[in-house]
Structure formats: C-alpha cells, structure tokens
Length: 301
Length: 313
Image (cartoon, rainbow over all chains, first blue to last red; front, side):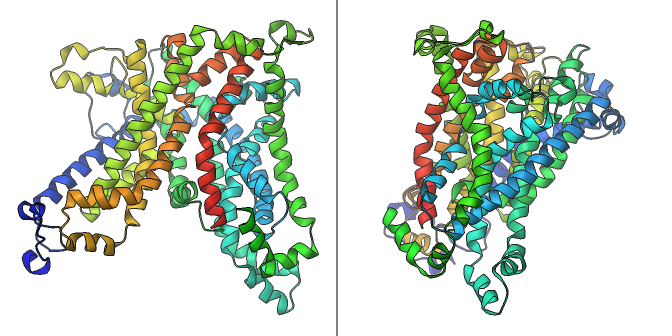
C-alpha cells in the first residue's frame, strides 16, 4: 500500500526507511514513542499525584519505610484538621480579601485602558503600550525593597489595601494586553450599526459590545485572580505579621512549624492540596488563552 | 512603524472618534496610569534615589540620608561575594532555561509523533504541573526529596543505591540547586512544550506532503522543514525562560527553609532580600535591585519588539 501511494524517492534515505504515510498499519516506532510519552506523562504527573495521595493517607503510614502508591489507607482526617485550623481559615480570609480587591480594581482599570488603546489612535498610544509591555516584565525581586519601604512609611504593612495596590500595579499591564486583544476582536462596525438604528453611544456600547466582551473579561479575570492568589514574593515582604498571612505565606509557616516536631507530611500535603486544587481547576479554564496571550500576542489588534 | 499607525488612524471609524472626543482615551488611561505610578513608579524612583544615598540602620531611626553618589554601586560591585551571586544566578538561569526549552521541545516533537489519546494524556499531565501553585510545588518536592521518608531516596535504595538511605540533598549547595532545578524545570516545561506544540501544528500539511514527495525522510522533515518553521516560537520561549529564570526567588527561599547554607545558595533576588530586609542596608539593596531591573529591561527588549510587531499587524 505504501509503495503505491507514495512514489519512492530516488534518495538513499527512502530506501532503508519507508516514508511516512497515512497508512493504517501499526508502526512499531509509533508504539515505542507512545510508550515513552506515557512514561514521561507519568513522571510529570507524579508530584501532583503524590501530593494528593499523601493528603489522604495517615501520617503513620507515610512514616513507614515502604511507601504505598495507591490510596489503600484512605482517610479524610488530614484534610479535616487543616480545614479547622484557625491559621488556615485566617489566611483564606486574607487571601480572599486581597485577591478580591485587587481583582476588581485590575479589571476596571485595565478594561478602561484596553478600550483606550484599541478604540482610539491618540498621541502617546504607542509609548503607553511600550511602557506597559516593559513594565509587565519587571521582576518583583527588583522592586520589593522599595515597596517595603514605601508601605512601611505609609503604615500599610500587613494591610489588605497596601498589598492590593501593589498587586493592581503588578497585574494591570498584562491584563491590559490581554483585554486589548478581546476589545479589538469586537468590530466597531457592530456598535456603529446599533447607533444608526437609534441607540446612543453609551447604550450601543452597553448592549452590543459589552456582552461580547464578557468572555474576555472572565478569562482575564481568572488569570489575574490566579496571579494574585499564588503570589508569594511580595506578600512575604509586605505582610510580615502572622495575622496578615495570605495562603502561600501561611503554607510556608505551616511547614516550618511542623518541622519543629518532625514534619507531619500528611497534614502539610493536605494543606498543599487544599491550596492547589481550586487553582488547578480555575487554571484549566483559561489555559488556552494564556498560551496565546504570551506567545502570539493574542488576537490581532 | 509610526507611518503604519498614522495610516490606520486615518481609516474610517477610528478617525471620526478621534476628531470628536480627543480627551476620552486619556481619561480612560488615568486609573491604570495612577495605579502603575503608585505601585511601581514611586518604588523605582525611591530606589534610584536611595541607591545614591547612604541608607542604613541610622536612617531607619531618623538620621537624614546622606548623598554618596555611586558609592553603593562601587561597594557592591567590588565585593567578590556579589559577583559570586551574580555568576551563580546567571549559571542557574542559563542551565535551567536551556534544559527547559530542550525538554519542552523534545516533548512537543514527541506529542506530534504519538497516538492521539497518548497526546491528550500528555497534555493533561503537563497542564496539571503547570497549574500547581508554586508554594505547593516546592512543598511537594521537599516531601519527595525528604531525607528520611522521601520517595526519591526510597526508590534509589530499591534500585540498589544503598548509600542514598537518609541522604540529605538540601545540605550541599550543588545538590540544593539540583533539586531547585527539578522544581523550576518541572514547572516551566509545560508552557514551553505547549507553546512549541502549538507552533508545530501550524506547519501546514501541504508543506510536509511536498517534502515527502521530494523524498525527505522523517528525520529530514523534522530538522530541515519543521524546525526552521518553528524557530521563532522557540526563540521567544527561550528568551522568556531566561528572563523568568533570572528572577527565581521563591523556590530558593522556600528550599532554604529546610536548612540549606543560605549565603552559598542565594540567587540575586534572595541576596537583595537578605541585604534589605535582613541587614537593613537599603542603599546596597537598591543598587542591586537597579542592576536586576536594568538587566531585565535589556533582556526584554527583543520580546517587547516582537509583541509590538504583533500589535501593528
């Protein structure tokens, strides 16, 4: 079949290796590669699996010399003890407040800015985009000392407002960039057609354009949420007090506290799992957008 | 490039708006600009000023900072310890970025070659690793490499490497960085693999068909047709990895908690943290921070240029 479909090339290469085709016959190379792919997938997923498995295994079993690789000792004790830990609940509340405040501000600010740069051509537009793109690359590690000083002189260390302001500044650039793609994707002609039909500019925007932008706002919002929710570096510096810890900072001190009594890995993994699972679920929603946003500049503007 | 923008501006709808309400876009930009100025602009300004001042414990207690010119930079960059940190950061960055892109490229090519359902399994597992929050990931790796009951040591012993029982990886700098690299690579390969795979799927079937008709074998098609076509994507992800791996801070900080020798395992970010938050030497910390920021801006320039081209297109 292969010989019929593919004219054998005159090259030597074609002689000892039949050219690839869409033939249905099983090729051993493909099977070998598939096995390799599965092995690598297993290797990659193992840490996540191990985290979740350890979370539902009693600590005594984890301390035994032979690990078990299946959930044969299933228990919810670890998860329950983390969920009733006052430190965890406190950090959860703090994370919700910080992320919530930052998220609302980021979305509003970035949405306005995205409208401006994709619906108008104005002097300074290009410089603004350039600045935004450079700013989103700046590492928190190069700024946190100054931010610490600023917040400490304003008395905003350990305050929700202080860290939220920094998160807004950190997240606004990429969110503008992401939303810009969505806004540009809604043709202005739609809005103009509605205006010809008698709607005012504002009404046309609210009734026609805004609903079409909703998916974009959700995707950008989830992305910004994940960034703020997972943020570690700035929170470590700006929220030094134990009562002001967000979840990532709390997990770190939970592990350190546990280390004093020989690390209860079951509880620590239960805490990690509780922090990771919601993030993973949200992440899966927006993943496609993120890849294209970072690499191919999202939708063409 | 400016001419392109000019042309777009004169085209229908947009130009009408511009004539009617020239102030609107500026008003819309105010909130975002204000947030950037407060959250990033002022800190950068403070950093520049402070890096030119003597700003230590005395100033914390009210003494006015003294202008010292480039003394902080001179002191910092004649300190051999600082150069060790810089060298270590660059080495760590290049090794990890190289390995990440290499492994990601390999996985992307592999995903093209395997059965459909295997590819989906691979994509899902990669996504899971990508989605895991950093702090949770480092915590899991500490558990995997735990010297007493970690599964890695158990596995090595089972494979006949008896001396690995109770081996503590995080005590010696080199093995500390090995574990840190595992974490960094594990977390960043998914993005690279998915991006390159997305690039690979853009290679049109006609091109490959033509190559086959001309007698190219699978290996030749891979190296002579596919690789040149996806080279731009590879370049961009490599650049991004270099920028991101240069700022590795949290992984190191969290692994140091396990009792690693701090001064021998610090990377740039950790060094700044130690200098500023630990020793209250704000002048020195500001000087190193400015160095990091400048390095980032220089490295980001090609990426930003690439994105701007996308904007005009």
